[in-house]
Every structure is written in structure tokens, then in C-alpha cells.
Amino acid sequence: MLADLEDTIVALATPLAPGLRGIVRMSGSNAWSVAAQFLSNTTDKNVHPTGHLIGASTDKNVHPTTAAASQEKPRERLLQQVDLVLPGLHSTLPADVCYWPAPRTYTGQDVVEIHTISSPPLLELLVAQCLQAGARAARPGEFTLRAFLAGKLDLTQAEAVLGVIEAEDRADLQQALAQLAGGVAGPLHELRDDLLNLLADVEAGLDFTEEDIQFVHERELLERVTKGLALVTLVQKQLDRRAAAPRPFRVVLAGPPNAGKSSLFNALAGRDAALVSSQPGTTRDYLEANITTPAASGSGAGVITIQLVDTAGLRSAEHAIESASQSLGRDQVSSSDLVLWCQESGGPQEDWREWLPSVAIERVLRISTKCDQGPTTEGTLGTSAWTGIGVEELKRTLTEWARSKKEPPLAPSLSRCRNHVAACLAHLRKAHRQVLEQEPPELLAAELRAALEELGAMVGAVYTEDLLERIFSRFCIGK
Image (cartoon, rainbow, N blue to C red):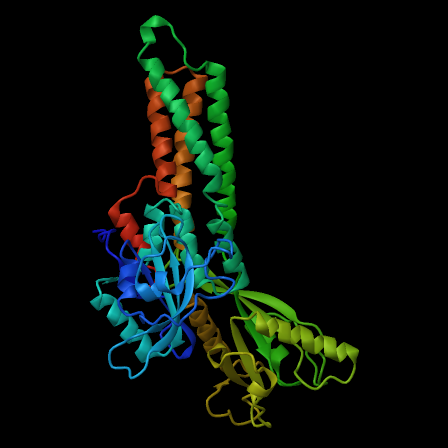
């Protein structure tokens, strides 16, 4: 069940962790009155200079006694420095209070944000005071849900907000931002309006079948249905491109020169893809090879593609070519999902963190190569490209890593949209055929209504509470 939209909701909008700034956000008609209950009544705090009224000219100054200090609800957008009076604190807590009046806000309601020191105990106390003053704890995604219900976003854009939050790389972020800007549903809003008008014309004609009155001619019918077909087909292709299989799970082999990376690369790839030599520094450029493994046990489960990348041995560059080679290798490491840090068994062990300081430890798997020639280092996986020891175990390990890779944040949204677009396209094709074959207009009207329902469901003009619960429950609280 949807929560009461008239409630004033509150949530922490930033991570609960130590930091310079923590933000508590409220939305609802009583947001300001809730916040005002613990704002200091002192009048020595001036309205924030040169930006106190956001979006207003600077000559519209708000006197301190008419803003937060007096607890009077401002009539315009406001940014003000205040003191918070919280129970259990021996002194006031400095903060900035931002206020945006409805309806020109994200949620379409009054919105208040309190910006203060990001100290977990202080932020928890501040949220508790908001709850005690009359606010209700926000549910996951409730701020964006209110934005959707207020008509600020359509459903695809609301899903894109989650995509922006969960984006893990530049490609995910760009895709989410494109959808947030209306790149998926934008063209369909105009089509939906056109189909609604067309349906109205067709249904109006049904009331005058005996009087030979045509509200829309057959040629115009054909042109407008054809236009809809073309537009929905383009959107379908756009969604297909976005929903195409993501880039393979990328595994980069790195380590000192002559550590056996290229031999292991060949053993994993199952072919001699890299030149192998006992001479250190043989690999100058990086090499790529793809291997595929079953996505899951059982037939018909599909496959997982793992992209292996062999890089030059890491060492101090002595000339320009060597420097370029090292730079290429580090670029590959930075774009990897997993790094195999390879060192020769029984040989001197180097700390990978000295060479790859920007790589998180959870992205590194340490490998002892040439384990047939020396003892395997503790905490590493022993392999031998020559005898095959450990190679299959390493493949299984890489497969498990690839399986656990998080799906793109927009995958559920794209899947939902593709289903609606495919169904809409099927109805429009039937409508197109009915116009060509001059079938009864009642059948045409039925197909147009069905196509409109699919478009409406896609952008959220038609929705159920179950659908909204399924979408917005994936959000974190405070968004």
C-alpha cells in the first residue's frame, strides 16, 4: 500500500559516516514547521550572503527575525545559517537550512534540508528530533516516488535516478543520465498524445456510422499509424542497443617482468595468443583474448564471457617506449574488474600495492606462477602453464567472480520498457494491417487502446501499487 502522501517525511540523505557535511532531508507541507521547532531563536544569525534567496535577486533580503529565527514559514526559497538546539547537547549545533516551497521542488512539496557536521550520533539525534516534532521516517525511494506522483518525473526517469545512484562506471552513469533526460520515454510522450487524438477521432466516427461522416480519412489514418510504427521501432532499437550484453568481465594479468604472465595468459586462453620468451620485457603492448564458460549449470543457461588482458611487466621505465608500455598496462588495470597479480613461485615477492596503489584490495587475486619450479607463496593460488596445475581451478575462480558481477543498474528498467514497447509495436502492426484491409473501425479502436495502455504503463501514466512498490523498494532511504 502506498504511504500517505500528505505526511511530512524525513531521512538522512547522505551516508551515516564521519565527514564534513551530513544532510537531513524533509518533504511535506509541515516540513518547515518541523524544522523550526529546534532552530535557535537567536536573532544574531544573518541570512547567508549572496545566496540566501535561491533563484531570487539579492535585493530581496530576508530579515533574520522573519526567517528561521522567528519560526515563520518563508514565502520564497531560502538558504540560512542557523544554530540547532538539540537535547543532550551543551551547546548549539551550527547548520545551514535550505528551504524550497512547493510546487517547484523535486517532490512537488515543501522541502527542507538541514546541512550540518556529518557525525553519526549528531545526525541520528537530528533525525530523531524531526520524528518527535511530527515527521515520519521516509520509506525507500519515497522522495522520488513523490516526484513521480507529482508529475515531476515519468517512470523511466524515476528508474534512471536509481541508475545514477548505483552507477559503477562512466558507461553506466552516461546511460542513466540519458534516460533521466528523457532519452527513452521522451519521444513516446508525443506519440501517446497523437494516438489519443487518433483514437478520439476513430471512436467519434463510430457514433456516426449511419450518417457517412468521416472524422479522419483512410490516408491520414494510415499515415498516423505508420508514423507511430516508425517511432516505436526506433525506440525498440534504442532499447536493444542499451540492453545489449554488457562488456565482458575484464581480467588483467599484471606483475613484474618474466613472471610467467604471458604463459598463463596462453594457458587460460587455450592457444598461443602471446609471445613467450625467457627474455624479460618481451611483452610491450597489451594483448586481449576472450574465454567463455557456462553461465550456470544445466543446458540452455547461456555463457559468461571473460576478457583476459596480458600486460607488460611492471618496472621502472628506462626510455620512452618502455614508459608508454607501462602507461598502457596501468590503463588496462584501471579499467579491469579483477587483477591477477602474478609472481614466480619461489622467487622474490614484490608488494603489488607499490605498483598499483589505486587498485582496491578486493579487486586483486594473487597468483604464484611456475609452481612446478618452486614453492607456492602463502595466500596465493599456485599455477603452472607448463604442467596445467591450477589452471582449471583458476578458470573456475574467474567464472565465479564473473557470475557475481552486479548487473547494470538500469537492467530492470530496460527489461520492463522493452516488454511494453514490443507489445505496443505488436498492437500498432495489427492496427496498420486493419487500416490497409479496411477492417471495421471497432477493431482499429481496440488495437489503438491496447497500444496506448502499453505506452502508458511504460512511462507510468498507467500503474499499479504493486508495480510502484517493486520499483521504488530498490531505492535506498533518503532518495
